[in-house]
Length: 445
Ligand code: GLC
Image (tube, rainbow, N blue to C red; front, side, top):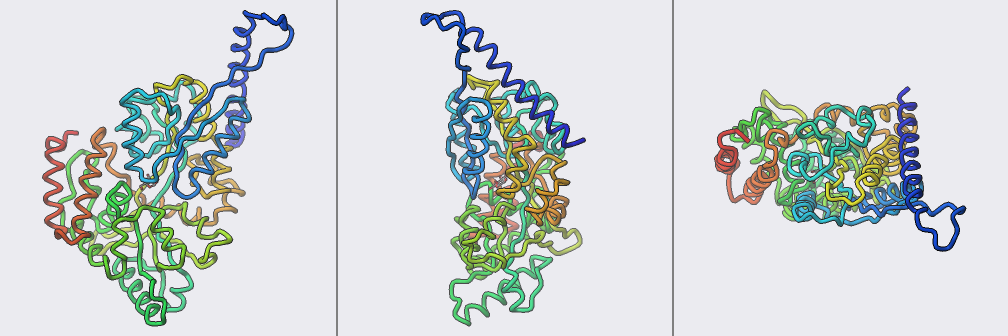
């Protein structure tokens, strides 16, 4: 039944594309200087430009999908590259959209952007023929702003703990279930290996640069200690609490001991580069890193385990994985809104999400694909990931609306101050809370 719905969607799109060509042909017939009225005119085609991501296999997978659509429909696609950092991508998109630029028709948009950029995007419900019903309701709700569906879900993400199975076996250690255990195991393996001549080995790497990725990592630390989500669902600033401060102070103690200080400048790919070259015992990253670590040329092929992130300590300790993911949105300045929406629908549709899951490990947002045998066979970790999704924590983008980016920047800057040992967790968070209170006029965003 679910597959049938997917099939209908694909047929629906093909039909829609066919209709477009017919109507364009009829207008092409009005002038016929060469007297070739019998010969059908070439179908009108549009050039649609799409901004793809550039982390891991983002670009190649997005481009091959867009090319498939172009081939099917006779349109052409232009793929525009974008920066690796979500924060920089946002700055660029804001700049383009605020100036009404028509260079990009389809934007890849982070799950935390609908409240920030929603007014610049078309309501995709007008084009979708109900396709959104196949996706996780929570993501559709996240992408709906003032009743408009401003983004179609493309793939979902949650933070994971990667570890070196071979090294843990060698030191008779188990994958850690608390951050304290991770600290101790990372130190034990790092010390042992360095003594044995493996001089460059580090215990734990993550995304510590001052950007959106650090917000994701730090939210996991804070939430796992029971320290909340920076701002609550009701808009109240909650970050100034002892659990959050304890979490950040523990992480500060890692810098220069189990984590290289260079990690304060790492995005996803820098941490993956270190881990994949065999120089780290543990890594926090998104699911995309798994298939890459298992590539034929990977030095750690068959040596990698993946599990849920560790818990904090104390009464409210839990495992917490920040919810991430990307959508596709259509600019309201697009000169070809219909074709742009068709491209977004094709790329976020069942056929393409299945291809992306199998070839590159992207997590579908279409529920039925989690029952698809081929998807599951290519991604044995998806069963375990269900656990990680169950623990997933959203960033406070819905509560803070158009100000989310300012909230996130204030948060990751405060966290960096603690990790750089310029402030203790308690003081940095008190200062941050005051700033956020001012920004929100006491919780009214
Ligand atoms: C991943 C997530 C995204 C997040 C970003 C931070 O791309 O999918 O939601 O904002 O990482 O670096």
